View 1: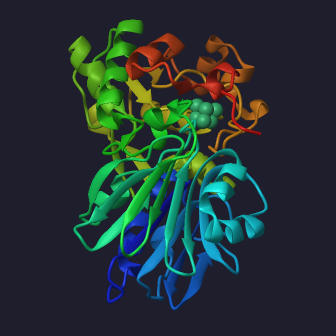
View 2 (view 1 turned 135 degrees about the vertical axis):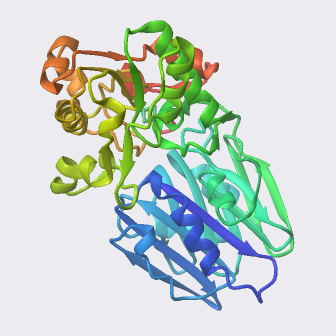
Amino acid sequence: AGIVGILAFDQVWNVSKFLYYSLVGLQHRGYATSGVALLDGKIREKINDVPPEDLEVDIGGWAGLGYAGTRRGYPVVTDDAALVIDGVIKVDLNEFSKRLVTDPESAILSAKGAFSLIALTRDGNLIAYRDETGLRPLALGGFGFDMGIIASEPVAMWVIGGEFRREVKPGEMILMSRLNVSTKQLREPRKAYCSIEYVYQARIDSYVNESEVYQVRVRIGELLAEERPLEADVVIGVPDTALPFALGYSRRLNIPLELGFTRTGSPIRTMLASDDFLKIVGVQLKLNPVRGAVHSKRVVLIDDSMVTGTTLKNTIASLRRLGAKEVHVLIGSPKLVSPCPYGVEVPEEKELIAANLREEEIAKVLGADSIHWLSLEGLRRALTSSSLCMGCMTRSYPKVIQ
Ligand code: SF4
């Protein structure tokens, strides 16, 4: 999920538009449902079963919170505060928000799980915390000297012309009031950054978990070229996530990169789509292959991940209809074989094609000439960090406080 909190240091500001556009900047993290809560004397909320873009933020306030994701009912509003969470938290939220107001430190230390949290108290303070694993991202920034912003990714600040200052450290709490911003390290970091953030969750122009997402993705493309150098006429990547993979692959092997797809409508992510119609035809609704780029060519098609395989199957069928001679598929992440217990949308094992079929069988089902996933070792090399969660690819999960 994408979460954001904004606080104006002067009450004359109305932050609702800032909040709205920040949230739209985070909708790649989940768009099935969204909501905001704004504080202007009292907390008022607007929660709808619609993508952030369609949320009508017709309430004003000088501080607010926003949520974009798959869980209904966020922000949670209690008698004491409003809360948004990315990840999983085990605590009674009513009791928790009461304690957050009186003693934020002990309240947070009593919460279990893997999460990033932003709370807005009724007396006008923003409280944020990123748990000590750092599994879910969180960043700190602002808008000049006028506003403080805390959000899942810096893009939530950049899209409204704000500045990103730094990432919130794992185990760190931020307290922001109209008068000052203070921070406290509540728990020793035990970093286990979510590797899926780099591969497809974060936006291409973002900075998460100590890395530029774009650079990591180009590097993944280069490593795919080392692992599986193919003889082909053209490389195409599925926009937007896989474009840097395709760029890295193309440069490394001197195979031309072509613009293989053009967009129709808003960039809905098929993997997160809740409705079967969208899941099945989603790819055609959002992306259409370009005949001139693939006709009579041996095509390397690069995508970011494979869940059920339905989207890729449709894409490959379209490429063949347009006259592609061969279609070789490369996936910029290792095989997804197990669900995510920390709130990222990875379905149950029985739905994950890579957990159930062998590679040749998958290539056959998809109608591809060949298929290759980035190796686990390749992903580790691309990320140059050993503090990673790779649970949905290895079935070995980091320890979180239960
Ligand atoms: Fe990320 Fe996968 Fe770990 Fe979940 S299990 S936090 S999606 S790497």
